[in-house]
Every structure is written in C-alpha cells, then in structure tokens.
Amino acid sequence: MDAKPTFVPRTARGSIAFKLGTVEEAKPLLWKAPPDRLPVVKPTNSFRFLIVSAVCAASLVAQSSPSFLPLKKGTTWLYSGTVGLQGAGGQPHEIQMSWKAEILDSVEEGRTIAVLLRGDPRDLIWYSGAPKPGCYLVITVEDRELYFLGWDSCALPRGELSHLQVRDNLLLKMPAQKGDFYGDRPDGRYEWFVDDRQPADLARIKGIPVGRDYVEYTLSYSTNPDHQIAKFVPGVGLTSYSYSHHGTVSEVHMKLVEMQDQAIR
Image 1 (cartoon, rainbow, N blue to C red):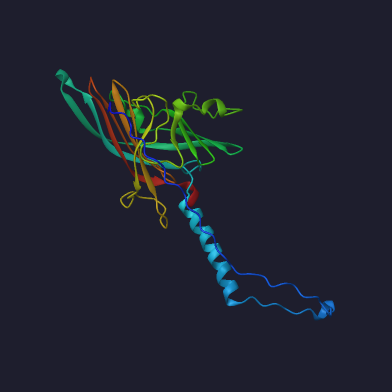
Image 2 (cartoon, rainbow, N blue to C red):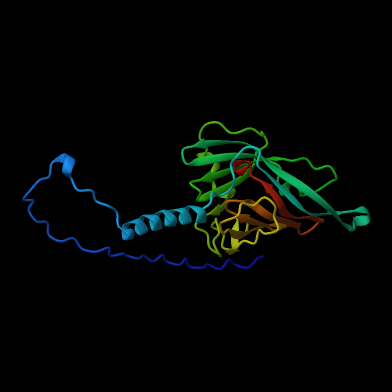
C-alpha cells in the first residue's frame, strides 16, 4: 500500500449540437381574424415525438444520477461476514456474524443533508465479544460530496454543518474516477483513495430498487498500522467493508446482504 497513487486524467466531456431547422422571413399580416375565428394549430406527429423524447431523456438522466444514499428514517442495511481476533494462546480466531446499520434521523440545510446513523461495520474493529452499535454522521453536499465521521452524541447537530465538511472526513467526491484521492500526501496514505470504479452487481442483495444501473466505487484508506477497503454505491450506500490491522489480529470483512429502504415501502 506504499505505492504512490497513479493519477488518471479525467475524460473531457463532448457536446452535441442539434439543428432543428430555419425560420423563413415573416410576411406582413393583411387580415386579422377575430378572436372566435382564430385557427387551431394541431401538433404534428414530429412535434409529439420531440416532446416524448425530451421527457424520456429527462427521466433517464434522473435515474442515472441517484442520491448518495437513502435518507428516510428507519432505513436499514444488514451486513454479514466474518470478524477476526486474537484468541487463546495468541492464535487467530474467526467468528461469523451479522451487523445492522439504521437511519435514526436526518436534517436538511439548504443543499446540505446530515444523516444520523446507528451501527456500521466499523463497530466490529477490535471485536471483544460484546460489540455495541456506534453513532455516525453522514453528510452529503449537493450529491457531489460525501462525508463520514463518528458522532458520539448520537444526536443531530444544530446550526451550521460547514465546519464538519473537512478533508479528514471526506469519503467520496463526484464525479469520481479511478486514481482520485482527497489529500496532499504524495504516498496517498491517511486519506481515502479511489481504487476502482465499475458497474455494480447487486443481484444477490435483497431489497435493492430495480430498473436502473448502479456504479460501485472501491475506496481504500491506508496507514502504517492498518488499512480499510470500502465499496460504496450511490443510491444504495456501503455495500462492502474490510478492515485489517498489520500487527495484533483484528479483521473485519462484511458485505451487504439486505437493505430496507423506507422511502419505497
């Protein structure tokens, strides 16, 4: 994980111009019809086609740009996987278990939304047999920036949220491409790094809304003693999380198996 991150240039967006036709020079009006005799202009088939096409295009754009994550109170994510720890005699020991995350509340301030979350796979780091769900704050800004941080008070913050939108809490920034990272260290450590971007395969996860394509971002965060790998899908949330300590055994490997989005119930 010590390798210097590779910078990948972002593809420039192209543009397409459509020529709909020309307008002939207007001619003087010699006779003005009374209001009750004005001609009725009926839409042509070509006009109807243009309107339908525009509506469909707008619908496709909306479907291809989902929000970062569901925001409805009561929405839950169920994860399943393994937790590794150092057992008796210093030998590694692995436990199969499930863990749940749930939205407790949310607040909107302009184009910024803060979501209070209880439970996350990170709760299982340094598992000791009796884990308790922690509280976390997820902040989205115009569906372009995603911030994630622990929140011990387990209550929504009041007032301005801008002081929480700092680089140390930044998880993902859109549009994101492979090679993006959100810090200034040349080695890419102690900051989230975009390892990959690819179509998401969510067929085995219960409760995922159908009818649109999803993109999955693989993110990594590396330090000297440990590293984390998270997979995030806009419109769904965290779909996979792994943690590994490089010294004393502490491992977490969880995958999303079910989501219950209260907004689509």
